[in-house]
Length: 44
Length: 268
Image (cartoon, rainbow over all chains, first blue to last red; front, side, top):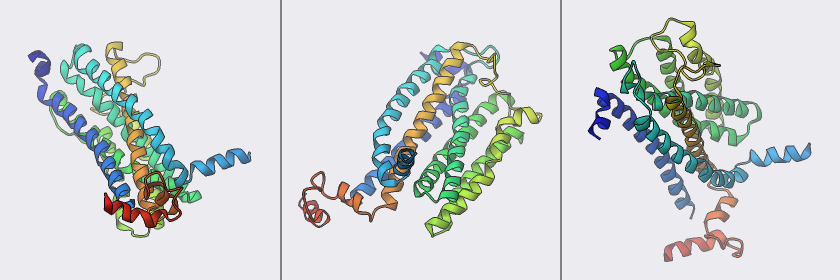
């Protein structure tokens, strides 16, 4: 398991890249959903 | 012929596309998330380490799909910008405006993950090589169209200006793609699209392709949400939206749907 996290010595680079991807994709999904909900609320 | 015309007319109207976008959303998002999970597991755990690059190559599974999306999103933005310039279809302008920030975010991601890959492999976070430079220009083109929209108050003029900039900037897309062939670059040449013999083992290639499909589906899912938000914003004074949301479901029965809804909302 610790082998997996170590990524053969490239842990910093690999996990930063994947982590950043997760954050960017998460925000891409959450922000427009929240905006949609807000706009619908304003209509009610 | 008239049937096709009618179909396009309906598809290109915001009122008709709003529910279509909502119906498409789960069909795009759920497969995208399943494929993302599967390809992540394959790419991080199952696929073997590269014989030259060790485990650092695993960045490819997020880097290449992000770079692919950065260009695909641009083409969608540019094509819709042209549709708006020529036929003045409002929905096309909403699509173009929606695609820009998603595309910009994936361009940033392609640059950042590339940088995180470049440091251990090339010994530098950044080099002014043709591939990297043209991708950076792509980011500025996205930011340019977004800024242009923000700077012009009149919606129609903003859409046309952004559409024109997007169209001119489209010349950059083939430049990015062929940059690794046209110029001496540090960036490695295409791994996947080499016809005939891709230079990757299936245990690495399959998760990469699945990830690319997942990113693409994810992009369209987010695009649908953003298009809905764009329609809600642009059509907020329209009667059809008021009928859809003001009186939660019973709007067709009530003759004064908008009037009643205010009282009902306050009583909640």
